[in-house]
Image (cartoon, rainbow, N blue to C red; front, side, top):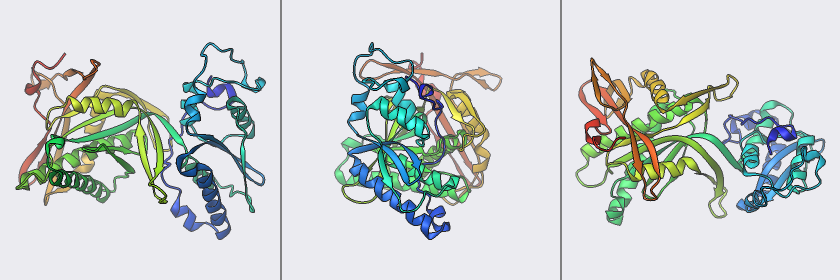
Length: 416
């Protein structure tokens, strides 16, 4: 079953979804603002602190309708007999007990606003009735207002992203430290994350980062999905590692952690949870990209930077209008290196950055040329995966260069 079978395009939305549009709320009329705040309050009540998932919505003359399902029902919908007879057109079916995981991935990765006909077909397919949210005033009909509602819906739902870039920072030997040392090192890493983000903002580099702790490190991702957004994330990783290297050079005790880092692009599910009964929501991701990163970092050497092998189709802009571009790992790093000029002039520990060079390592071929070494690592489950060793060299005006990653010769005998 595909979304095209029920009249929906089989594509995903690339707009930012984390913010409900506070700036727009401040600029609109009191009536429209009140209407949208009522919509958000109603969605929060149906969400029930994560008990339910809001799948889709549709504007109606006197409000809007939503499809609400218990969070456990998403898995139940994909179970059943895969050989069950499927109608050629779900519009002809009164019930359909088996919706595939592919269908849900498609549904959760696209715009959630449906037409009334699409809403009826999805409801019939999943055997759920739509829920009506009445409004005393009509919904604002401007595109930016409808986008705010779209953002609200995704906030109370699950999102599937087929290509999400994620960086993982892991503190080496964290479990062997005393609790006091653990506190100091995780705090030092958190500061490096904030410091790197502040430096990018000063260069007017558009970023929309989210983070999730692993206990002994952090997953970091850019909520935006474009190629530029993913390159910004890769460069952000460089700045975090550079800030950490400077902190380690100054630390007299084990207050600054030794890190290893990995970068990968793959699929994931994203969701939001409230902290108890507090109003704040926190982002979480889980999927192939986090699984791959965890297994990569488990085999990474102290100080090493690994890039997973991937082939990703990324939007060429954040609004997705200009289409997509498909890159593999090597092509992505090449694009990132071409984009490093915008970081020149940054200050690291009081010294201006003259140049930054990032590359994937390999053997020397002579004449100034190098191969790129593909490494095969085996995890504790016996599963093999391909990765690349990355190096980053940051050159400053009146200071020693910051050399991140490990040299290729250390990997001799580990490569395929």
